[in-house]
Image (tube, rainbow, N blue to C red):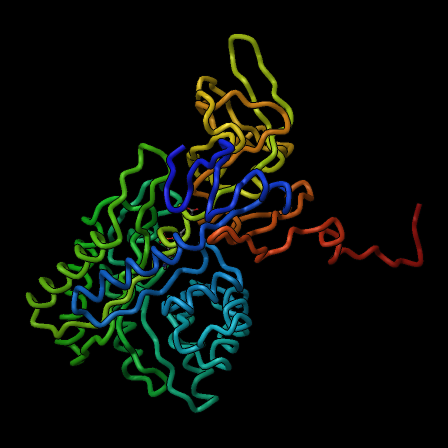
Length: 440
Ligand code: LLP
């Protein structure tokens, strides 16, 4: 397993994160357990901020909370001075409950309900990212009712595809997200938004995909966005104050992944904006980005306890853990790959080859295929690295399995930031029907 952040092997030969022995964490908090290296999350936040400071651009780094949204995470992001991207009333509620400053919240989503818009308006959030004509009309009506002027960005689809997996590409023309640029819808929406007294149109937004390893997609998207803004300037005299180029910066899950550093992504983006805006004689906008995965992804490690070990002679060795697609849906959904190690045998030779099975009643519930591993025994602790993004966020209760607890570790201290779901939690919303007549 690739050791990064504060991860290391301690004197006992155990995996340690944030100065905490993971075997002890598993004993104390139970398994499965999401462990977050707080110092590493903060380091990631700071590296984006630092890169922008060096660029000379005015900027906002908005953490895309969908990657991992809990009150503790919102608090941490607030402390680091970042803004926050939310996509639902639930994420917005979590942020507000954590005391996140509303003016630094950006509300995304392709189908915000009237209730969600109301929540955002009540809280007086920093801006809405309007996705389509329906939302534009709805938000205008609600703003007019209140007599307020709402800051908005328009999400546009610049026709760029940057992806490592089909399901996580959102920037191509045929997408459920955003106003299409090529057909002229984006320009039309900008025209409408500017004419409305309900809006202050700050600028445009695009998000071209996720887990992106190079900068070409961003550069092409920025070129198209600059063209769009030139047209808007010619047509309506519109000057964009803000350009939001979304998130999608890749991380290393396995040795096959070769991400750039936050600085490299930011440099490519700022250079492209400088060049393209100069080409069209447009003033430089304030630049916003929305990293999610690259802030929290590699800071998260999931600890499992190993149970059954089943060896099919000459075929495969299955090592089953006490979690699976309920706490990490990504392997089943995207064929996502991970690295892992036996946390209590870190100094032992990696000379076994196993496949890690989850415990759900589903053949597809496999966490890792063909994993080189130390010789594992029932009762051992398996640590799967880089599960910090979209792990807890997409966790679920399939097979009525409770969601694991989440702990933040730092300087030898571990703090539980999300309690483990109990059996009682699982039936909390169940109601037995109270029918008087049972027909037999
Ligand atoms: N901004 C917008 C508008 C987005 O749609 C997304 C991700 C982000 C920012 C953050 O992207 P990131 O930096 O985290 O790549 N569940 C999938 C990922 C879906 C991403 C959806 N949008 C996964 O587990 O890989």
